[in-house]
Amino acid sequence: MPSPPRPDEAHPYLRAASAGIRHHARALAPSDTAPPKPVDRVHLDVLHAHLTALLQLLDRLADHTRPPHPAAGRHLATAHTRLWQATSEVHAAFHALPGVPQAEAETSGCHPERLPEGPPVLTICQRHLAAGHVVRRKTTPTDLRPHSTTYVR
Image (cartoon, rainbow, N blue to C red; front, side, top):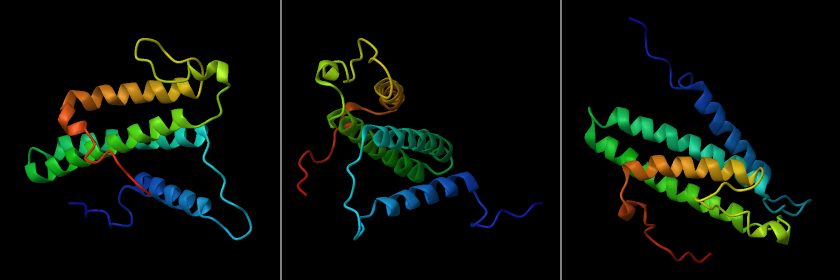
């Protein structure tokens, strides 16, 4: 019987993704020499892609955990819902950022009745709509409602 992998050897791709995020967060930290740069739409598109990949992982983990360990599965399902809320906010921030010429501003938002025109809007909106479809199949509107709508920083 093979021994289980050591914790530092388990799930190497997930560990690499986490290391990449930590590196990116450190790179964005303000320095004494350069002022912080504001985030752009491409940055949020990549972050949104990462969050939707995490959504898929959490969904599968919850599905596999729930039968033998219902309480742990419920916690993972709750984490999935909260991550969806964060993903939705990143998507909203993407659309709130400037960078689209005024003539295209009306077409850059998500419209379920039609596809947005061109990348990166096309990619983030398609990804968001597809992820939203999966989330809404497994949760209720009450579950998706944010706990607090006011946030003062």
